[in-house]
Image 1: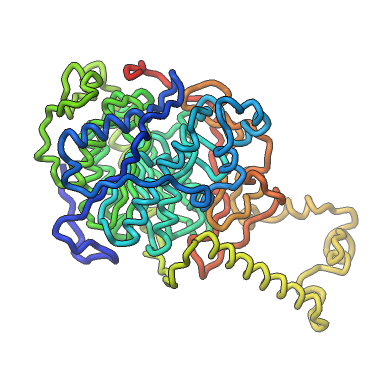
Image 2: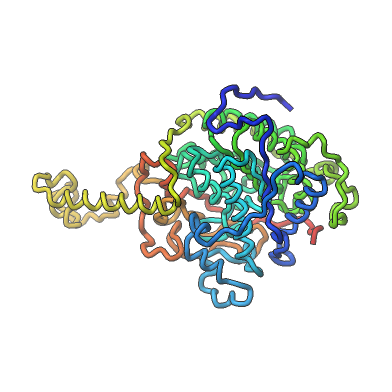
Length: 560
């Protein structure tokens, strides 16, 4: 592996400890939930991981916490109130009473209703929130929560096995004190939910390394998805093809992340470690080993910045638990001391016949053809670094006193801005000295009429005038008007997207204004224009890719 020069200047909030303080968050019972007999998502992988962590004795080298469940109010810091109400009330027994909203909230094959689903969501969200708060309080340097990392959930809908986006909630918590947060995603699927939430801000830089194809879930993550408004150039996508190997992946990852971190200068990092990018994953198609996946974690750790490490995808659960156990050791600096022979646990049968920490995941019949040519990877690297070059340096953020509630503070700011805008509008109406043509072409135009005296011929329609306006005058949009929100954007995804497990119920079939949230009274309400004094808090919808075909789940379920 190539060595990369470390920076010598310490960025803000850099650790001053000789050894980082590591904390570990695990909710008792979180591995006992069940999505369904044939569903690929198995929370039991969390139980396997925890048993291996304890079996190796790693828990003795870090602070272990059992987090409380997230509250409804905490979930609503990002998610729409009607959506959270739905999650709290729906059960397998009463789901028939919610038939009119299942499509709207994207409930189906990918995201089914299962027993105690709301408790599951509250548990994994609570763990990520606690990790973020420990980091904000300065009582830990590295916070690990393998229960989190569910990066597909949107503001008002479930997606890709994810119901609540714990990553967005954790980042919002970090933004209370950290001016800039870097989000890195090494799941094989694009981190669309996190990118979408922060698409219009420069306070969060999202970087995703993933398989990209229009018919591979979620169908987004093209290299041209770069952010919008203040967030332009602060979404970085690295689209890859099937079969990428350890050497190619690590070389690309390091060559992009080193200059990205040095340019953006984040004060905290959130790393999503989806293990479906490993070889032999049921839903994956890469050739990565556990050691290579862990090397990405070690490399990011080496920057000595406050770090939250989360789980994510991963559907061959014996390999997921091996990977996250190894990466726990990496974060503790103990990977060299970890025996390859797995410790005895109550779940030994899952790891037969070799009982090793590092099985061979990409040789013989397990190895997929590498469709990533060197020339293609070099083009991706150059394009990504060009995007980094166009970042406007590290955005400056004037940090004020931390409000007790970010959501209520933003609501107050919104109300203040609306009041000022209304007063300004009244002032304009009452100003007798303002010339008619300052704002309107004629009195007919002032009254909302078209034609005559204003340069248009009689009978010209408003649609005609709009058609003559350059496309560049309008912000990028997906579908209709985006939901008016200061914290996030909502879906913005086309009405039909690839499904992770097949079937039609997992597709989005709703007929709504794209980006409108559940319970929104003004569906066509537009986002307010970006406020230069508050970067990172104005977030219109991100442009999404239309991607209709489904992805075949593939692979045998050797864990059921």
